Image (cartoon, rainbow, N blue to C red; front, side, top):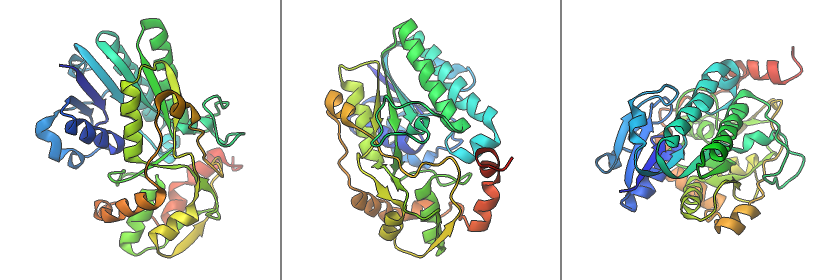
Length: 329
């Protein structure tokens, strides 16, 4: 029976993919070290999947799962900008060495297709909007670089070892089960914890900057459509094809706001050109930002134990960001 191996399957996007595949009654193997993923995300599926707690940045017995015919969905990685500046070695180990180890396991298996969760952060501050896959690569911080290096490894291994792949460059993914712990990071997690605590939303800059927010189940649908298509060895942007301001998000969430300094190296806009994936795969987003926010708010208690960020805490957490990416030297 064909396997569906999901690295990072207890995490945000990975757990939603697991849920979708369980409904399709697939043979699922989840590999996760639970550094950012949570067993809670997959506990209702635990009897229908095989879960292996392991660290893919280190070779181990987990490699034995790569036998026979399988699809591989590679989500396992460290995200967020600030910690990648604080500890770039850790990010390299996870996002580059980890990807290499998974590719080496694939080389010895009968992989039908390798699906990679890449990042639109590789574009840096693009020159063109909406941004196409052909945009010049400009990685401005270690997280973006390590995700792009992972993609480069996949392209090379595909060419040399005949591995069929698709790399999906994800824009601003949001939805239920997004990360609740750890360092200062993804905007929705920060805002939801602040809403629960009754704190004002910390808006970076003017709040007029726009983002291409894509709901997580739409992203999962893109991965599944790509896995089953006859298309291989391509890179696709995955986004909503629309932009929404940060101020609009806080208006939808409802609550008070406080403004904090704009951060260097952050684009004023992220905006995916998704014409390629529409044309070749037939995928397009279905969930509007309004409906997506409603779904998150119904499940807001998921973030009840998330850290609550204040301007003072954010200022302390982002000092290295300003030091290394700004004019402060």
